[in-house]
Length: 243
Image 1: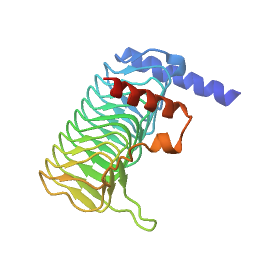
Image 2: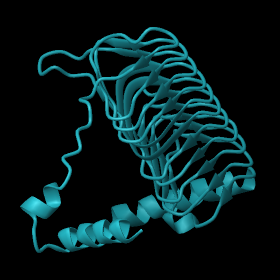
Image 3: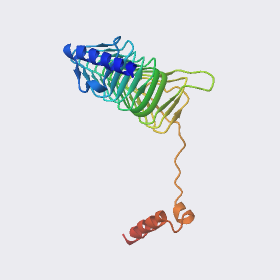
Image 4: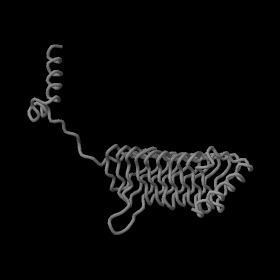
């Protein structure tokens, strides 16, 4: 009880000092900043923010709501929303979140973006590059101006060792790609959606690593007769015949 009361008193004292120095704290009761952390003026701390260790937050940044920073560096004008970040460097103007997990060794260069349900570890994201959603990026470097499509996985672990992936500048990784490290995607290259990439893709090429689609005509009518799907298919067939 006394420990909790003492912690609350220290929290209030730190928050009051920060607000006097020009930091906007929307809900001081739910905002916790360690005495060892540094928060510049004109920063906005939203409710549920916790900043610990030797974290530094530069002017103009917005942190939260519901965000935890542990030993992180956040650049000028960056935004970190509903995320957890540990030992990460977040560059000027970068956008993180919501629901992003940045693990140690992550470095986001200026104006990059890491979006919803993305995990990064020991990886560098180049200036202006984006990993918008539903991806894992581990042990990798991504150049500038590249876009990593939804549900892309950097396959870095073979069960024994971790391997490295290099993605060049202005690369487009198709949704649901798997990049099996060690592998390099050259500058300006593409990967087709749904590909498993196990070999290097040269600059300006498109890597396609998927089976050719095969449509089995009439399968539903034969194998799922009487189902709603079969009824819909039959209606469509009848409409075509009438037309």
